[in-house]
Length: 417
Image (tube, rainbow, N blue to C red; front, top):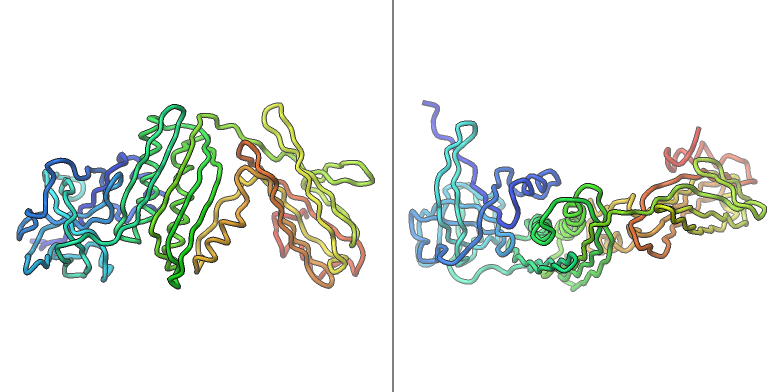
């Protein structure tokens, strides 16, 4: 009496458990909120001969470690052209899903929600090139071009190489996240704290069709779950590249994981005044224009302490000015690649992002006749460095104002009232 209602497309993802699917959903790496953990193709899985009217049809975003697909019904097959679903997959219009066969194992009743199909994904036997409001369609034949996503992971004496092939560019970030996360779970065989070194090689062509290669190295640490902490930065980067219009052709991640979650911490900042070091953490460092402002950060782990020196020359143009300097562990920052409009901008963000195992410094001072900005990054440590300390800077001379409190304009966090 209430009429018919379209059910959501049943989505299946292999390679990760149900709670890991939920973890991805929290971080935005899930194409459909109804996705359920499932199985990929195995021996005896459905083949192309099952793609007949009334049979099961899969729109496949990726295969391999992470097989990600939606399952519906074949409406008709005519001269190698397959039409199905009777509703959209994601209604994206032109598409590049793999056209896959599927086995429906059962229909699961759900009195608290809606029933759903439990399916296994079979052979990819063509390309779905159209995803419309009234259905999906594609041609039997070769699978669409894919992006190889490889995860090499070592944990003590254990190692594993996982691979997924991604057909739909918009799914690349999600598949990379789940591929790394699933590989961590397979090799570590537990959830827990730890650290890891990780390197990437990303190849493709930018939005102008020019080839590019990204080589990136980083160290990660987590006191909660190293598998999650070590999996999202690559996915964020791939999302940014795809969003900027790049075509990524291959991704390889290599990681070495340890149970040690120790870190260094930036504890204080000192200024050298008249040959002596004074603690200026959350205080004011005074300096004359033309002089060198000499600072150092105390970095601790356990009973081990080290100092990182940072010197910045104060130019005449900021005489009478005010500003701040922050000295911080790279692990206290996060890789920010959101909102970037080009592959070049993404690559620049990766280049400028302080390593998690380094101490960084940022200076911003506004004076009577100009401003000073400066960045610094130390040599890498053998652990991730956390912590952040601020120092207000007051430059002598000039009218003494630099306008209306330029320090507050630069960063409210960097100044004390």
